[in-house]
View 1 (cartoon, rainbow, N blue to C red):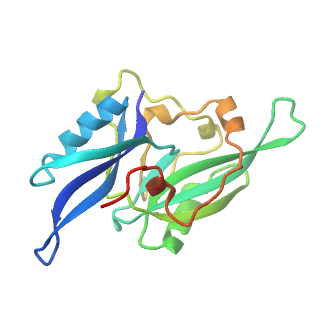
View 2 (tube, one colour; view 1 turned 135 degrees about the vertical axis):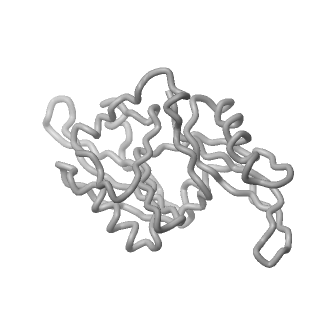
Length: 204
């Protein structure tokens, strides 16, 4: 099944003023394995990047859904939390999930998250909205997967999203009930994007 991977790519980029700069840019794509992710990024970028480029790092990225709007190429990573009853129903467990949304600003990203999750039948809180360094997203292709995407457990609570944006879901992003329980909020938030922090190699 497909999962989301963040792939960091090094290459020499020509800037608008004509000068050249060595950059290290992250791309998000859906793939079945790390090897598949590497092969696919070469396939996708070979027609977009002139000259040579190399993969500097690949990291599996935990995202529930991606909401893309045509009016902006800026991405924001949004983290929400909500409570679910445990197996004996005596108390609620806290669950955290990550989303990406394209928007012109943090305020617009927040409004679009509210719009996209308007039919969520439980109370939730938006914990953070952080600018993401992601340059471009390559969603999974139907021809690349052997079976249809499994339904997310969260989809039992969420109705179909607004038609104003495109929703990307990798088929490997489904979660089981135990996964939801295990994702407690014992998390430390940094000022920098968590997608950026996943890479161990320093940017050039």
